[in-house]
Amino acid sequence: NAGVTQTPKFQVLKTGQSMTLQCAQDMNHEYMSWYRQDPGMGLRLIHYSVGAGITDQGEVPNGYNVSRSTTEDFPLRLLSAAPSQTSVYFCAATSQGEPEAFFGQGTRLTVV
Amino acid sequence: AQSVTQLDSHVSVSEGTPVLLRCNYSSSYSPSLFWYVQHPNKGLQLLLKYTSAATLVKGINGFEAEFKKSETSFHLTKPSAHMSDAAEYFCVVTPISGGYNKLIFGAGTRLAVHP
Image (tube, rainbow over all chains, first blue to last red; front, side, top):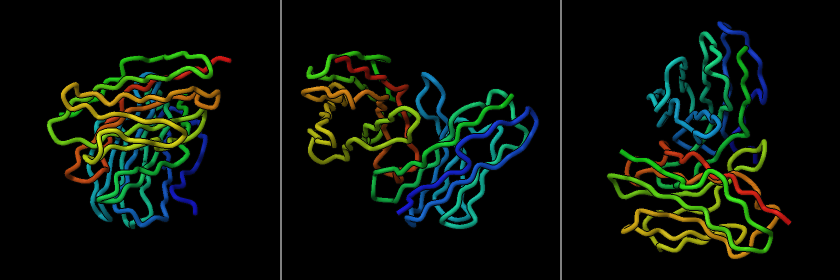
């Protein structure tokens, strides 16, 4: 029973590099979201999706792209990494009508 | 607009003494409220949730919270702290309508438990 799986767990990037953070869920939940966690700021919503083919921006979307081609996968793309994107990233899956969000274990990203 | 304020960034208690973590919220809609816990270098785990049913909500590991609409508060309590309770705690709000995919987090309260 994997739940929500994020890869990689750790990543170091140079400024200007691109990469994709992977998120997969096996619970068949409609909604998926990406958050970033920074000290003293809790988690902030980057992008979210209410179903395959549908995405929308959250509170801090700049510098990130997402797509949702299947129910299971919701990758987060950094096109040109910046030091301000150094953070811990969490993916979450929720189901309409069920309030508990299930989180992945997080990806710790450092941009140098 | 919705927001969450956790009134204490750090709380320190002795093992066996009560825990109180304070949370106030602001919401234009009927809210759902949650407490999540994050142990060091771990993901987030749901402690308890309020979704317009009973105002006193019991969660895992002996934690409970009371929804007080008149005070716009959702404080987390536990009668007797255990060393394993040391972690960061997040109060979270989301509107009941529109699904639960847009969570608004408080800044977090780091709980330290001393022997």
